[in-house]
Length: 375
Image (cartoon, rainbow, N blue to C red; front, side, top):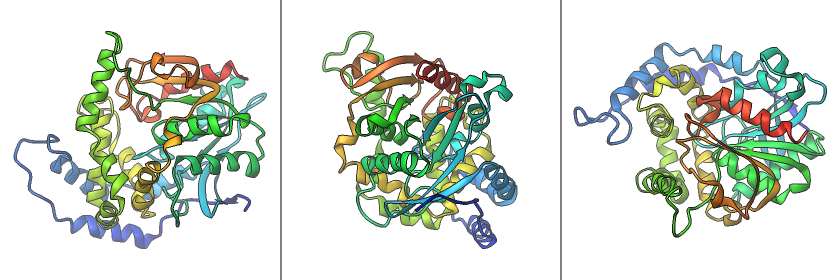
């Protein structure tokens, strides 16, 4: 079905219901002084939710989101929601940008102008892109998945169909982090003739059995993350609907689950608002709360466990890797030899898994520099 225009609009009744639920939140007790040690800091989440109820202006954020052309396109039985913005320059390169969890297409919103119209943002018009930013199936304001199997491989096929069959691009570039990194890497392998190159700020790669001294710090970081930070993945991957019932009912519970990840994973030294504003955090959360999409989002983990080929895709098209120091699955170049055709590997001094929001200027320049060589 051809793409059809779509603007985000949350009904007043949904916003009224949200405020009522926030006002009725039954808060748990926390051990005094523990803060974030046991997970979400109840006092921080309470403060955030009070701002959500009384100060946050969704209608203003909604108008900002709708500044760029939005569309829905039914592919394989699911409505894919996406922004599609044409570039201003001599020969814009088509670029697909793919997010992960607990992010959304909002992660890329503030980069659209610089990517599509670099000359107006201090850059070179020759670096312009036609930008396509789709929500993962079941995420955000698109349609919900109604059957099994919507893992990375099926999503990769749907996005390739969107780019080539619906939008008419013979070849295109990709960029992604988290699930976006896995899915776009899968596209680079399974749909290679259509892919100009893949830029990734997340890769699935494992340390060698006998790490070198240079490998050791990264291997230790990975081991610590695996021990202390993967309960969310185990839960999403095995019992996603158990959590989804709670998140569909409680905006405070959803905020706690998502904000704790932004705080724990980001390069913020424990101060989440040193990197993100409350408005940014809540706008991202609204992509889960308003359309009631937490169930569809978490099911990606369940389906990925049944899609092992996607997690270790071999990619022979040119690959650029942006490695941020707090990326939850950090790796070293030697760990991907034989799997990825790495043409550019950049190590950054600051930043984490939400690079488009944490370090937008750094990510933007790395994307431009990598694809400049492939134009």
